[in-house]
Image (cartoon, rainbow, N blue to C red; front, side):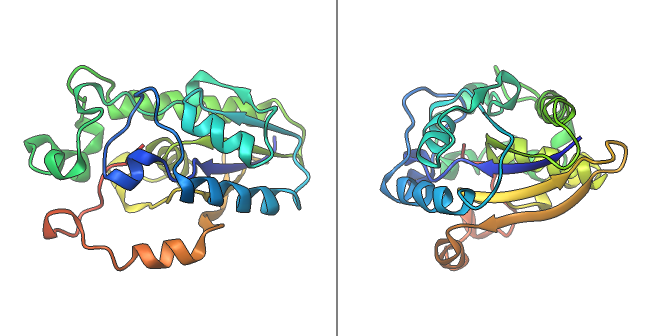
Length: 221
């Protein structure tokens, strides 16, 4: 088993616009996102990676390429949650939906209309990451480029958290988290939400919360 660097894709046009992108095609990185990816390239150049893997969705593949992981293997299990009819809608509008509160407080009971359940997403992505870790020797490090909710689900699994608490974890665009799977029965989380774009993360602390509330928004893709 090995160590897995979980990289959330860099900022996309949907992130910038406050839109839940989901699996919509044609959502690319914006200018800041491309800058973030180039900074990631500098960071990853100092790491001896055995392999890299990516979600099939465009913004992850673009992040991988710009970050120097052009040979990353596409793994379907790393894909974004299928938000169904919520895909493409603004977060401000979604915050008015009755289902929004359940997404925050009881995600294990949520199935998105016309889409995937949160538990299906969790099982799919955790199985994919554990299978990737099992492919490699002890001491190797691999990079995995994925999305906010999938990465949070993997971290919650490694931490042994009840899935309904996974919204308490935050992973921003371009962030890096690290899990050591040397003991697959007892993985060790060594880093959460490490920032290649620390200035941007600090600036985000001053953004008003949606609807004046203090609940975390679901991943913006």
